Amino acid sequence: MLITTTENIARKNIIETLGLVRGCTVQTKHIGRDIMAGLKTIIGGELRGYTELLEEAREQALNRLEENAKAMGADAVVNLRFTTSTITAVASEILAFGTAVRIEDV
Image (cartoon, rainbow, N blue to C red; front, side, top):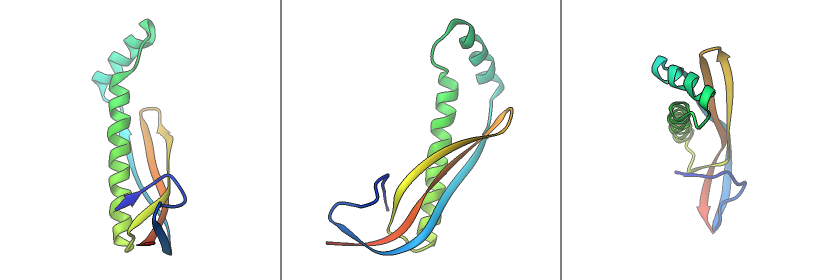
């Protein structure tokens, strides 16, 4: 499965547009990470616990997007985007979305 942030794929023709495809996950803060983040806000620096949490969440959302695209019969996803939303004070949604397409070699 090819997944790209661009509208086109080099040396490929889009032969069918299947529509919007998405994958999402909602992640909550971990108490240990939250305590360390609180300390970091005082002394400064990267919030590595949150960085790792968001990286894991993006990967999970991307995997779900790919599963959904395959279920639609797609060979690729173009125009991939990510968005993050706050659900509650302790939970965030990561959404990956794009356009599922079928492709062929030029």
